[in-house]
Image (cartoon, rainbow, N blue to C red; front, side):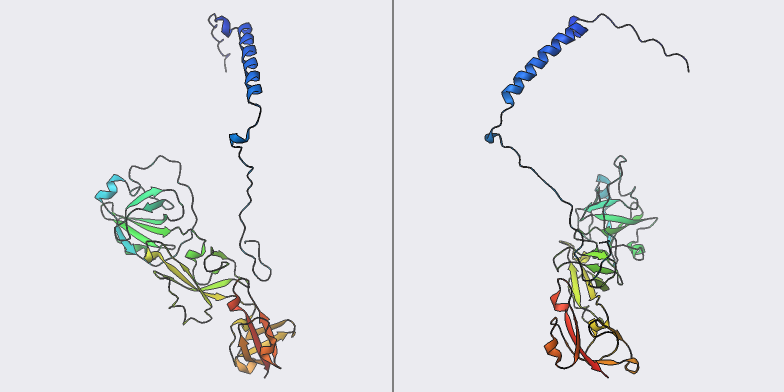
Length: 330
């Protein structure tokens, strides 16, 4: 590298830009600042002092019985309105900000997987606008080009609602971003938990005191379809205002400590352990060593069992799912 050229010689400066001039100006400024400071250093209750504010981290998932793991539209849109396609499906919720790229002139035509949209239209007459991924928005889980057939989203994982654009020859497969926990999109076989029917519900690892999802039904907040399911204990409903097609009902089964939790009168069980800490397993009667003689949803009700042996358990927050089970040797 060569030697850099010398800087140009500055023009003659006026007195207030010279070192002496700046010193004088600085002295004047300091004097003024001190005067202002003296005039304003006092406090006055009428000035409306703000109180101190503190914040804390949000609480995690509720403690369950037993030892738990730590996991606790653009103008162009109006000339080519989308066509709705309804589908059953599921999706993981969770938002992320839009990329920092400049806004697209046609966010529908340029849509990519992961983009989010708000709908100011209806289910049958959508009007989608690009937006940040937040609760109540729709995230594109797939963008299908060369088609306007919304049924092509039917087998796309995590799909809730489909919108086709014939003029653009594409279909958006969309996932609704629910705002009260992650359980809204839970599939059968996964486990979920919430403190009550009205609290947030989230997925978590399967463990004693949680609930296993038996079935997921969309477009309803009724538990009618749950009642015939084996080991059905509880239903949780997720309603979406103004969009009944996005309503969800989860049919749930409590994860009990062992098979005593769902055992019924005269059922055969295999008893192991001790009477103070029994473990029950459902088996054929030819392999069983005890039989169920009674059951009540009252916790620790040993009087209910009379002279028979008994075992009892209760979950947090769901008293109706507690039990006392009576049994005897067979």
